[in-house]
Image (cartoon, rainbow over all chains, first blue to last red; front, top):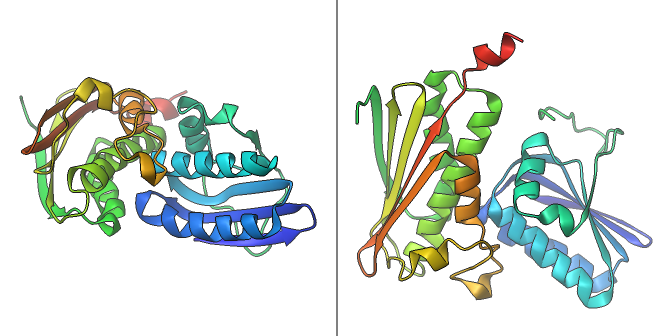
Length: 116
Length: 149
């Protein structure tokens, strides 16, 4: 599941739940539609609400990174949990996109219940 | 192998069962009182193996995934995930990082890399036309040991 926040020059995709093979298809289609429509210079994949990720999630990131390259956009990954950061590291994805951890509570009503 | 406890389960190779498979193996492993990190590693490794059965083993057709989990001495967990799908022609090639047997599907080709990184021992047995069995062993650290710091 994904929620999009569209701002001038920036699209944030708040990814939610489990990023596995079963779930990434829908996320990919939703994000790609928005990206192709606006071609935002900056796309942020926010992982605050992601509870699990395997290499299907890596495939999702790699594919989005390739899409952004087509038009010179930049991809960032925000707020991955400690374990997801581990998956990003062993897959070398930390070389594909800047990873940032924001201290601010993004998303308004959501509580950050996930261990960091 | 000296088995202290065992779980065997089969289920259809459908993507909606990926989450269940992860949870099932981790629920069984919970009796070892493992650390959150080791459980997360195990969850991810299991997910890769189950996904391979669905995406590659039984590409475009139905099939059954068999999962065996054994608790071995010294807090070692053994997981075997098997299918009777198409099998792997060249196992060494399949295990190369970033190699994908499904190049049109936007797959990272990192399933085996993740399994190797998150477990202590990985074996892959396969026969073309017959199927594939992946076994993983991981020593799970006790949460209590970590809390003792």
